[in-house]
Image (cartoon, rainbow, N blue to C red):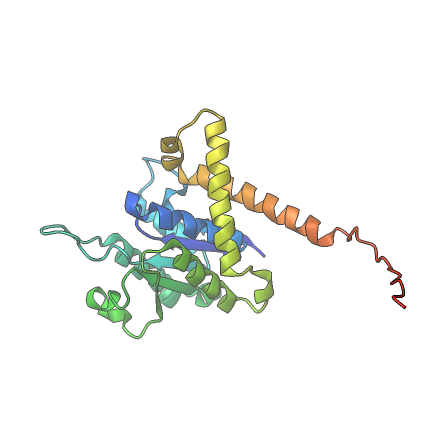
Amino acid sequence: MDEFNKNIFVNCPFDDDYKPLLKSLLFTIIYCGFNPRIALERFDSGEGRLSKIKELIDSSIYSIHDLSRIKSKKLDEYFRLNMPFEIGLDLGCRLYNPEPKYKGKRTLILETEEYSYQKALSDLSNSDVKCHNGDSEELIYQIRNWFCELTDNEESIQGASIIWDDYNIFNTDLYKEMTDKGLRQKDIDKMTIPELQRKMVSWIENKKRNREIIIKRPSARKSVKYKIASTS
């Protein structure tokens, strides 16, 4: 499978409150065998943001858009337009780009509160938008189930409960690895997205490798025949 058919453009908030959701989102994408493409994957002050977003969209057959920040939280606060703007760019690529490969683009739209998107983006009415309620476990379920709809080989994708359990084990292992090096929780919280993704890829590859070894390893058990003594 070429990179285009494995890439997933991720359009979501980047604030600290959303970071636990972002980590679980990236972990699930990698766990299911796909490549997340996100604006935070590289830093170049000389690169225009719009050019970067266009490149990420153009290079991805799939996209995940989380509209969790389209509502302001307090008086005089502006709600964020980046996510709606980027979903417009992505859908425009799918609808207007003449290249055949873009007709196969598929999109998952997420929100925190059910049907909240209809109040801000009525043009998306009747779209199949999934709600995660701000919960990382529910987010994993929604993304995993969407992947199953995209493939005719759903057996290749682990159950959501397994992904969730492995995600928590990954976080525990990452904490131990970092603290063993003398680092603190703040170092983990401030880890860049590229570094975090490399950690995830390495951990997941090792996990799956070990799982295959366990499955393929022949059983050491031997059948034993017992002679039952007569009681007569």
